[in-house]
Image 1: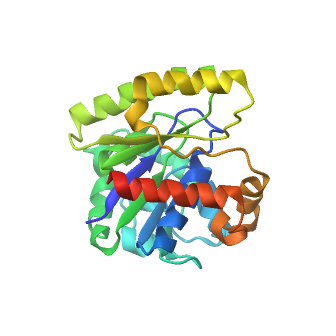
Image 2 (image 1 turned 30 degrees about the vertical axis):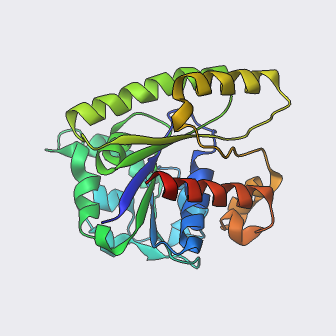
Length: 253
């Protein structure tokens, strides 16, 4: 059975999707069979691995509302050992359509159970919110990775996210654990960055990934070419960093 990991943070612009794409890619290069599920209506994880969303006949939305099976929606990418379940803006409507559906919080979990044996890892990229799409991802997951910037508001958001994980664990998914907190867009020259890192070490020391993701132009450029960083520029610092995070995940799991 695949290990299912949700990448989530209700605060946008923290490198969540970038991290999901590049860690999924790194795990594939190591030799693990990986499925990347795009559960964000923006669909950035899909375009980040080369999916042309305008040509899609079905997406994560169709899986959640029961119109299509997971196996019917999954696509192979051009990257090693990496498949994707793509998303489009239609996914935004799922929040409303699932409102009165029985066991609505378990729709994604039920859908991926049929294909879980085909993969070593299933990576879910969540939207920047704590709505039903994120709850579905958490209910379906074994672990959670929280990418976050070293900013004060990120610390506030982290405590809210931890409360959400605790609630989902209590109500729906007792096996859910925090796999780790990944510091992104790191800038060691800023005092605030160092202060936030100290706070994180104080309260979440063993959950912090040893590797931090520094600000990197190549990481920002790669999505516009529809490629993970390892395929866009394998010599970039960001490629090396995400490869190291993938190895840490294997050690933790």
